[in-house]
Length: 304
Image (cartoon, rainbow, N blue to C red; front, top):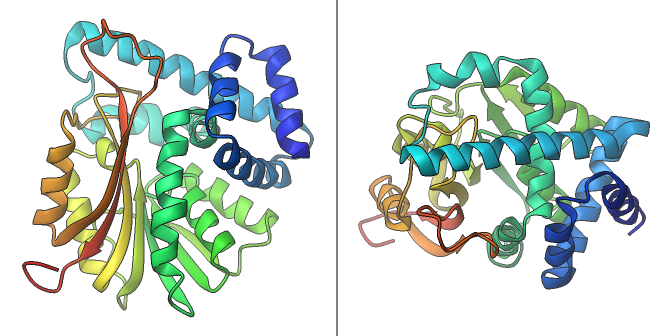
C-alpha cells in the first residue's frame, strides 16, 4: 500500500478540507478502496512521474470545487445550466488545460468517493465474473475518458483486449500514454471517435460506457449504438449520474427508471443495478446527486 499511504499523507497536509470524507470511505469500504486506489495510483505514478501526487490532488480539488458550485447553482435554478454539446465543447472538451485537470479529477473520484466505490463493487463482483467465463474477448469502451474501466478489465482479465473511443483528443492522449507507461498498450487501444457513431468491423463480446450518458443531448443513441456493436447476449457495464450537475453535464436524469427504460428500448435487459449516493448529503437539499451502475445484456428476442 506504499502509493496509497503516500497519497493519503500528502492529502492530510494539503487537502484537509476533503480528507474526512476520504478517510470515512477508507473505513467503510476498506478492501475495495485499498484495492482500487493502489492499482490506480500505481498507473498514475508510472505516467506522471515525480509530481504525480500533486497532479492528482490538484485535479481532484478542481473537480470537487466545480461540482460543489454547480450543484449549489442547480439547487437554485432547478435545472442544469448547460443544455447542449455546443455549450460545453469549447470550454471543456476542446480546452486542454481544463481537460487535464478534469481528467485527473474524475480519475481520483473513482476511489475517493464512497458511492463511486459502490459502483466499482458492482463492476468487480458482478460484471467481471460474467466475462471471465470466456477464454478471451474483445471489449468496446464508448466514451472511454481516462480509460480506467478498460485498464481495470485488462488488468483483471489478461486474456481480454479493449478498444476505447472518446471525442476528447486530450483524454485519448492521456489514456494512450498511461497504457504505454503501465505496460498494457498491447491490449489497450484508444482513438478519437464519436461514441454515438462508431461502428466496429465485427461485433464485440462485451461493452463499457461509464459516465457518458449525462454528457449527451440524446443519451438513448449511446445505448442503441452499444447494442448494435455487441454480439447477441453480450454484456455491458454502463454508468451515469442523476441530478448531479458539473461543467460537462447536459442531460438531467431524475429517476433510475428513465435509464432502465432507455436500456430496454435499446435492446438490453437489466441484469443488475446499483444506485449510490453520498452518505453526507444534506436532507434539506431538493436534489440527491447519485451514480447508477447497470449490468446489461443484449437481448436476442423480446425477453432475453
